Amino acid sequence: MLSAEKLVILDRDGVINHDSDHYIKSLDEWVPYPTSISAIGRLNRAGFTVAVATNQSGIARGYYDEATLQAMHDRLTALVEDQGGHIAHIAYCPHGPDDNCQCRKPLPGMLLQIQQQLGLESLAGSWMVGDSLRDLQAGEAVGCQPILVRTGKGAGTEAKQVGLEKARLFDDLAEFVNWLCGEAA
Image 1 (cartoon, rainbow, N blue to C red):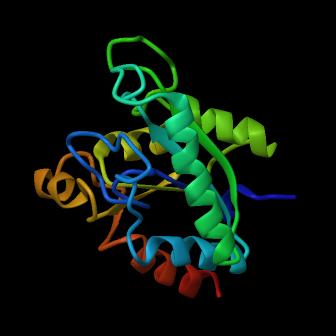
Image 2 (tube, helix red, strand yellow):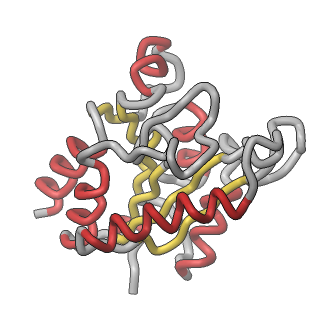
């Protein structure tokens, strides 16, 4: 039985792969950070379950379609599996900021979807890793431990020093995984 403490939820753009202010609109533009894929594999080998929660408003904006997004997620899944890892669930919000949905971070809808998909009673004690304040806010709303990485928009988020009181900060996903696996050992 999976325990919440052994669940790590990752934002995608800026945590797993390079981000762009112009959106990641194609498979060619989806470029993982060199150490992020191996870090996910290491999490799995250390007994952690990994899920992804990602805002993808580029779909609502017409920049790309769900088939393109699925191709990106298929590539992510294949790369992680090549490292001996597995992503238990990928939740995404295809809506725009004005669509009044319940899934777009900072709302916790995608995290609740992950909770339901994985059969957890609660997400309290799990980990939410993001590069923006809205990632951390979504996690905190359901009891996740907030982790800010400095990749993507993370350094800018850190510089604002707003809403980070409970967050632990790391340079990137690999540094967080090194710390977490060291703590869990």
